[in-house]
Image (cartoon, rainbow, N blue to C red; front, side):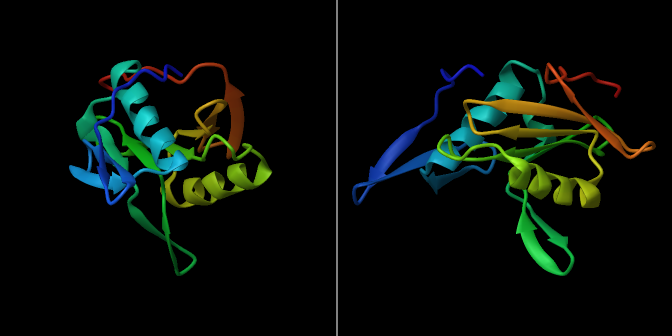
Length: 146
């Protein structure tokens, strides 16, 4: 992933904040938030997903618990297409990261699951009919009618 996407920052009482163009607000800068910001911009600029189809940190209820997914991208028809789980660069992408993303996936039923810590990124295509998942090499580019 290209790390050169620009993000507006400001300091408030010696704490850094970044401006989230999607949520239209300032967010405290953390390593995970930086990954989240850069990754949605990558999906928007490099993979052509329109900003209007990208949601960040929305609440989802799973087994009666309120959780938040990092990024969810919808298709042109408004159906969940890609769910992205972001971690800090210091956090290794492992089975627990995958399990967390798949828990959201079971509820949302997206076609793809992406796991990233900004340094390593994994993309998984989910076949909802066969209930089967497989790793793919490339994150798909946005297609208008899919």
